[in-house]
Structures are given as structure tokens and as C-alpha cells.
Image 1 (tube, rainbow, N blue to C red):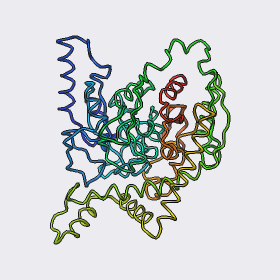
Image 2: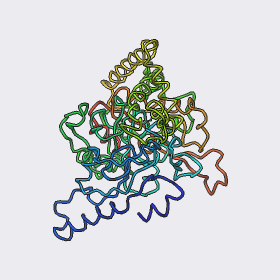
Image 3: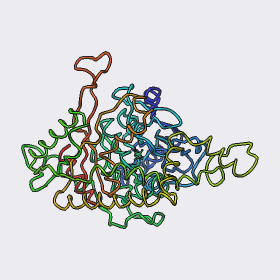
Length: 467
Ligand code: GLN
């Protein structure tokens, strides 16, 4: 809490800081230790966490970054949150995000922009930018994010932390405020692969409240990591592992320093014993337009619940029901959200359904088949996370299409429902940064490893060896 009060005036990671609750949770852990010692304490007991503000927390305001939910205090915990609460983890508060997860820079928050701790003139990425910045600025030990098309991974890349997008269905979506239900997933954002594994251990599992959650048996992801001692002294722990470097994610349009860092990561993986081969996925580039049709179509339906009656702040003074609906939505929803509802409604309309929605579903199947086929000959696929490092505030906010294009390397993973992890893979000079101190300001670069469905254990093990 002290770190937040020192740092957050500049970084603005949090929408809500819940000091009373955090202290009460911490005192409960202290009381347990006073009476029974550390016996029976969960490994996460007392660990201070931040939670993205689209994940429901009982008794703590949950806004999804939107004015329409400015007064929404859930009466229940999301399943991921109730599972963490049961461990004795401490919840510091709720982190800033693009409104309803719609964005890649956190500038679409209706509350505040969040700043990148590496360079406060730059964005932290998005939509889980508040969680990423809070972890990077050491305002919390780890955080929860959500990922519909890259919102855990791209901010992890921009802020130099670890972000894990679990397999679709690994973590219950119950209590996650929906953006696009067939793509959304909750996941951990942390300093290390092991921390991410510990959080996934606590959050994962089937849930009667989410019919799309999977009943896959629980795995101890942290116990599956190779002991650090076994990774020293020139050992080749990745012998026999095969990794595909996706050529469509390199070359034109990608910052040369990022391509360089990914190729260096590939060589490092080889030095650890892995075979790294270039692999071509010809449908890779089709994912982005398909994603934006499907995500917006689902969003246009999901967001119809914010009408000032079922959910959301009601605009005062309307003469009749239709104007009450339209005024509440008009006042409560931001510009990007409205743009997306319009586009999604258009794509789903009777005259255009076959041309857009149906076609995008067909592309989704192709992308999924091609990635799954590649993962039958490779243990994991390696790509950059985004074409550029963190950019300046305002640099892309006036050009939605430029912002959408930055999601090219992450959205396919959601279309295919696969797990993927982003972890630090180097640094680059911040081009054009003013007043460069000795050596110049640096920006982090994150690499993305994509794994087989429900093989988070293998993916985390690989990432941990690299780390
Ligand atoms: N940037 C992507 C979008 O705006 C992904 C966001 C997300 O994963 N929530 O849709």
C-alpha cells in the first residue's frame, strides 16, 4: 500500500485501491500465524495481488473501465477471485483497463490513462495495462488480467513482465465481465514464470457456473517446473524439444530490434538443447480481420445488457423507455465501445451475416486447424508479441485501425483457444526518447511461446528453462 501511494500518482495503475480489505486480509493471515504458525498456510497467503477491474470482486466496485459501471459493486466474487480469496491472498485493489477490454493501450479507459513504468511518456499496453504496470512498478507481487485477443500478453511485453494466457476453458469465466465470450480468458501477470504457475494452480479448474470451463484434472504447474539447480552448468534441458519460429510474424513491419531479440531467443533455446526451425503458417495474417469481426459481433450482443435497467447507470430525466435506454447507453459508453457495438451489429445483421460473421467463423476454423497442425510437429511456436515496443501516449489513439493492427501476433491464439506465455527476451533503446541518460532509456521486449491446448504444464516448463 505504501508503494502504491508513492508510485501510483504517476503510474495510475489502479481505479480502486481497497486498503481496508487488504489490511483485513493481511491481518487474518497474521492471526493464523500467531495461533498456528505457518502450518496449513497456502503458498499465496499474504501475497499482495491486484485484480483487473473487469473481474468481479464481492463488495469492491468493479467498473470494467466504463462509466456505465461506475457504481457497480458486485454481490459475488468471480470464481478465480473466490479461489484466490480462499488461499489467503491479499487483494490491494482493481486495476485500470481499456473500457470492457476494448483496446491495446489502456487509453480507452474512461477513468485515466495508465503510464508505462519504464517511461511514463509511453503506454503500458492493453487492455490489462493497469495490471501490467502495477506489477512492473512493484505495486503488487502479481496481478490478474484477462485476454480476449492479447490483453494479458501485449502489456506483459510492453512492461517487461511475464503474462500467461491459459487455454480457453482452463480458468472459469464466471464473474469476468464479458467482452467476447468465445475468446475471453482470465490469466496471471507476474514477475516470474513460477509465480504465474502458482497463480494458475490456484485459479484453474472446472466450474459449474461456467459451462465452457473444462473439467481437465488439476495439474500442479509449479511442481512441474525443472529445479533451478538442474538448469546450470551447460546442461541441455530442452534436448528433444522442437520449437517452430513463425516466419509470418517476422520481417516487414516488425521493429528490427524485436526481430533481433526473437532470433537471439531462438539461438538461446538451441543452446539449451531445443531444435528451432522456421515454420510457415500461410493463414496467419487472416486471423486479425476475422478476430475483429467475431470479437465485435460477440461484444455487440454481450453489451446489450447495459441499458440502465438490467445493468448500468441510468441516465436521469428521460421521457420514455426508448429514450431512457438510448440516453443511458449514450452517456455511459465511450467512443470506442460504441464504434465496436455498431460494427458488430452490422456484421450480424441479416443482409451481411454470411459475408462477415459466417466467413470470419470459417477463417477461425482454418487458423485453428493450421496452428493445431503445426503444434503436432512442434512442442511450441515462437513469435514476437507485437510489432513494436511501448509507444507514446496519444501516438495511436486517434487511429483505431493502427491500434488494431498491433494485435496481429496475439489474436490467433484466442481464435484457436490455445495457451501462450509472454516473457522478457531483451531490451531496446527507446528511439527518440528525450534526455537519454547514460546508455539511453530502454524498453522491454517480450517473446511469445504458444503451446498445445491444455498443455500449460509443458509451456510453463519451457518458459521457465528459458527464463
Ligand atoms: N486489443 C484487442 C482488442 O481490442 C484485444 C483486447 C483484449 O484482449 N481484451 O480487442
